[in-house]
Image (cartoon, rainbow, N blue to C red; front, side, top):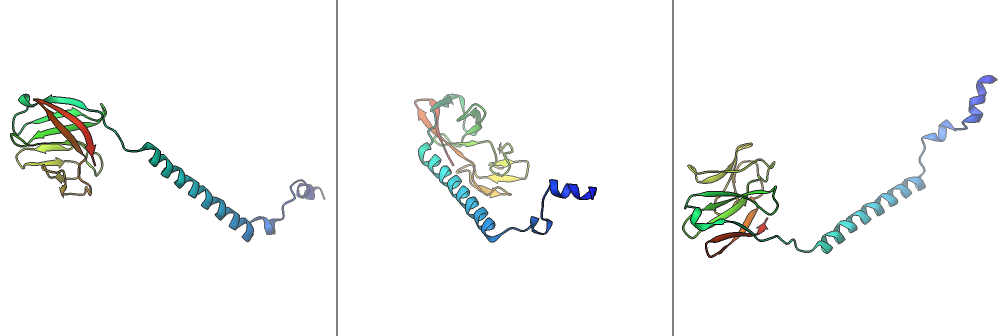
Amino acid sequence: MANEKWRSDFPIEWEKDNYVTRREFAKFLTLTSVALFVGNLWLLMKSWWRGEERFPTKEIGDLGQLPVGGVLIFTYPRDIDQAMLLRLSESKMAAYSTRCTHLSCAVYWEKKRGRLECPCHEGVFNLEDGTVLAGPPTRPLPRIEIELRGTKIFATGVKI
């Protein structure tokens, strides 16, 4: 009977080992639901406390140095966020993030075709408002709000 000693050291009823009672299952579902509710409530409260995002005002260039049809590359709102300013006419300018909304590839201005293009998956964006003209991106480019103070050009915010 030396083989039976392990049964007394580890008293497990194998028939009932994998059995989960309805009470245990209901308890698991209830605790999981409460945890998900608390997590969602935390995210909601965090978004309320954060409030409206404020962007810094940053000087990005001089109007006299940017000819009509010219492009100025700058960083905004952080030093790692690259953007471009396009001078479309004497009185009209547009600025966009250079990160494609599909997979974050670099967007560039195709002057011959008069549009913004993403070479990774052939995404095409409108120069006037940054909307998608073709390709896989589903969202327009984030637009950088610009302000002209005399001849100085300032970035004042991001409109997504």
